[in-house]
Length: 293
Ligand SMILES: [Zn+2]
Image 1 (cartoon, protein in one colour):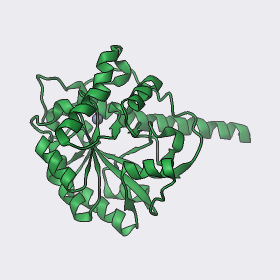
Image 2 (image 1 turned 90 degrees about the horizontal axis):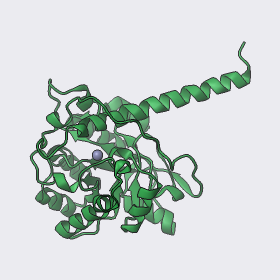
Image 3 (image 1 turned 90 degrees about the vertical axis):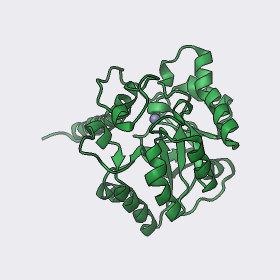
Image 4 (image 1 turned 180 degrees about the vertical axis):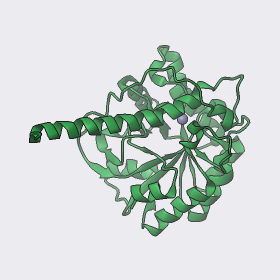
């Protein structure tokens, strides 16, 4: 017989293992994608998301451990690829890709389930001023600025009048396979939000040159605001990686909130406005429906 204490310890260890596995699974796929990014290797997502050996060490979230204050369950869902699947799609692509049909079914499920799609600004107002949120609020976000998001996801979002936030990194805008400035203007006009995903999609935690770091965080924001003519108030950390020094720079740059990693669940707390929790979008309708009953 195992003592109650032993059972408890096994449960804790088991949970930590499962959580760690989920973290590595999601993080590793985006890492594989961006291992292939270079100015000489621009874009179509199949090449971009090619399976490459992961070389970096796994980083840890240094901020998430403790949090206090006002909190709310508000899922932030992170989408990467929405397009028809190809037989040649690698495992790395399949892990973060949804067909347009699956994406449409997920949006329909949100409607049928009584969810209300809100913006990051609504969550910011909730924490800052106590502005009420609708029942079953949820935030939809899209990463990396793939052109397919405009072709396949945007019309579905428009159909449901769901405002989503598109986190783009400025070096990619207008490149083959990526959103153009005119795509971004059209999505803004339709009620979407554009967020910052840095200049070059680096591991911010690996940058030691402070001028480079500031340009990734603030220079990219200036570029977006100048070209789009709107304030850019949110940033998503590439690979979900950040540390306290990066959070301090993000605040100094004038952002109102930041999306942290995307494997930490649905709970948002007031003191983590610059490291908001998020989850990777389930890639099947069944897994989405079980995640959001
Ligand atoms: Zn990204």
